[in-house]
Length: 220
Image 1 (cartoon, rainbow, N blue to C red):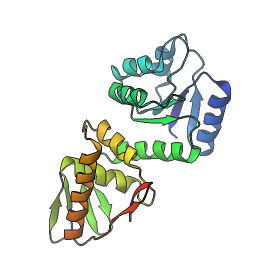
Image 2: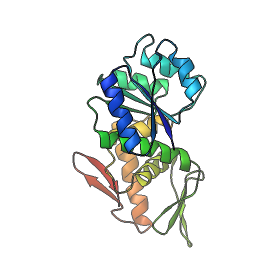
Image 3: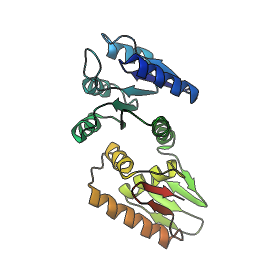
């Protein structure tokens, strides 16, 4: 069972998060001691942290910075702040994802699950229909031929694959690229998705990536 640490000073919200996580099969742990938050995080050694920006004693982004100096534990910022500057700052400090209150419980669980899947399969060989997907080598292949993807194309494809059947927003893709130290703008994302579609079409998988207008993309 995965242990998820909840760093949130609002008791109602932290209790709600714990119930949500426990019911989803995780072990939600609520941080109690904000005077020694960093020491408590080390002691608990969670598999993932839900971290609020506005916590007592230390600002959540400072806590994030300090944790990142010692650990690569996945961290999702959960906050009422919704400015783009806060999101960019959190991601630059090393957050794996960012979600604002009031959050959609289903979306939060999907993002947690996606992070755990990425961790488990980061360098493993994956499959898509009858194709073998090798992120480490940057190739997709079948018995007869192989398709070479760029780093960004592979990041986008594997993220869609990990979330296959679910809508992935453009923000989700930009965040995942950011997490992989690939800083591209909105136009560059369009170019990468277009090239990925063309390569998949040439490989015999036309319309593999479906666009949902105003929502995002689905890998079919």
